[in-house]
Image (cartoon, rainbow, N blue to C red):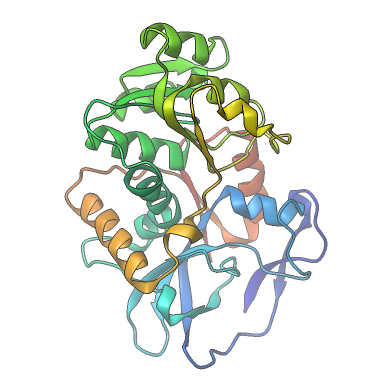
Length: 311
């Protein structure tokens, strides 16, 4: 079968399109014929070596396809090796795709949609009237976080670049901030009369962290769930003391650690997609062999919506 392999960490050129043996499932596993693969920032971290994996490896952690033994349509996330025509996946991680949802939508929604779900429903469960900041609000996870935050009744400050401001506006953000020319901290503090927000959902990291922390209100939460701009330097815990702030570094794995929690979160997600209360944007679909180009597009932030690879 054809797959993408990384023999040594590096830039997008480290992604090689090669022939590898078709895998065989063991006990408690299923062989999935891949139909659509979600491209995510964690794939970039694995490829670059920021989150190191033993080499050689097949990157990718999200896909939708068909269980070869049963013909069941499934989707999964947080399992390595999806940049391929086939993948072996633990059965407990597989989620059945509802009949009304196609494989491409499922692959585009699973990781980022459940990320937005755990952030807004679990890390800090938003309630009516609370104020939140969502960074990178035009990106995949950011856009879905804005939509879910609004569905829970929050007042949403959304940051995005000049060319993508229409996306958080369309998703219902209450105040959209152009991070290329405006100071989000200044705007937020002015709008909240210095009180700050209840929660900041920050996937950007290094370039936003300090002002994100300064924007959190009394006993509020800074949820740092990504670092697309780079790693945040070490933080003195005493900085949290001014307002009794909670700082957390969550990931999807922390919030789908059991089969029951995985299914409950996925059930909520697909229900929102089916009743059209959640809009999934697919920016581009590229062939599997173009994985390097997909990574270049993702890192350039030139796209609005999900990038998919199609075997």
